Length: 389
Image 1 (cartoon, rainbow, N blue to C red):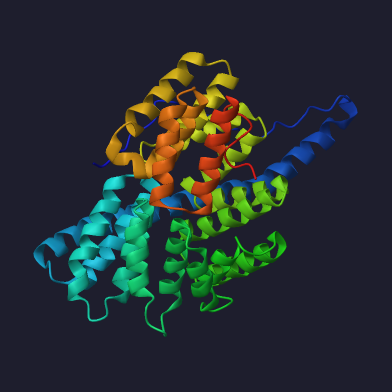
Image 2: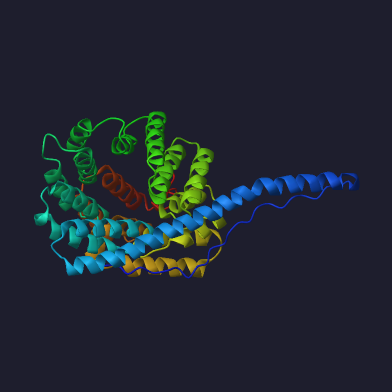
């Protein structure tokens, strides 16, 4: 079953810039006018840059959408052309990052599987397939696809990178470390995956250098924004939220609707108790493809005294995740919710099934939280703010 994309009925509010404060002395009116004029002149380029970024990001999305329509027609007319199918699969995956429609991932997977036997070298196809399976939390299948892709002693960094991701997802850290040791230091894939294993200062430097190389190569705006969001996340985790906010501002100026940057910004506002900011940001990215966002926004709504809104958001979360076929995707979040509401028998059963699917650090930590919560009748959602270190 695929989960339909659902737009939020909550509206987003946008901040406006601060107004100039009037001078108290009439003798300084001319000076104030001069200062205001200078400030306006300085602010115009920034405002023009922001509008230009919005237009360019919108153009990228429009071109991608047009390319998808054209390629769909060409693939239908030439179904054995694996190059066309691979390009279309890549565009579907890119659109998922901005639109969060799960059907794009299933379409991409179908194309990749169909084109695998047609490729002269199937390795890139296995790499893409593993990445798509990871997105769907089909961790064991992703691991097997990545194992095939990285089996050669001369495996490329992209194959090794996806194997590192898949191995960590199922908890095979030894295999992940072995593959990581074979990767080329200094590459973008290496820098991103080293961030979780190095001290924050080293990780920050590695990823900064990788992002600079992306900038030099003229990468797409959404990829550059993704890179800046990773830098923001590192800064926040090392206890520097101000630096994190600067990177997030840059990411959203580069690609204003980047879901990853908006989510990290929302999580940071949530962690800091800036409830109105958190509500505005979460409302922009609500999607049935990521139902945990409904729970985060529900907590924010309660803090703002919007009890009925919070109940509706929790209801939407349950409508999505109670489907048993979606448990591999959302089981851990459902278990946390059930434990928070006293249904520990169901929460623990789901948690155990999650561990049987993958024994990763994330799953082990989440299940430990749920067990501790049920043992003490405390909520794992209390004291845990999404996005906090």
